[in-house]
Length: 112
Figure 1 (cartoon, rainbow, N blue to C red):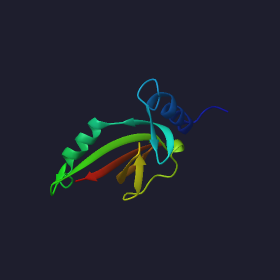
Figure 2: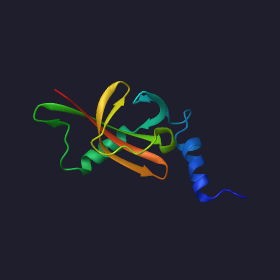
Figure 3: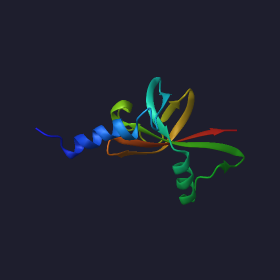
Figure 4: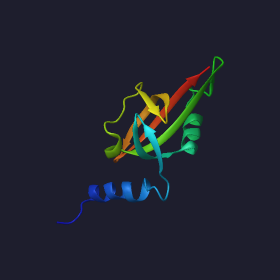
């Protein structure tokens, strides 16, 4: 029996898109080390498209980040508003999408 399209996508996700030697970096998320891609460029583009969220709110700096991780490595897709610890720092999930087995997760950390 041959591979189906979903099998090919799943293989490409791990072997091409989230490949440690190409784009991926190891980070600790909620106590577990996993391979992720941090995408600062996409976060900037999303901020430009959004009218509401801004880098400065009432004198408080908001750090935002976007990362990609394999769904099978991460587990269930985190809901918006959930706390997530990324490399020892607590963030809130502001957006999470399953993009064919790769999660796109946006985070926000507020500091005074």
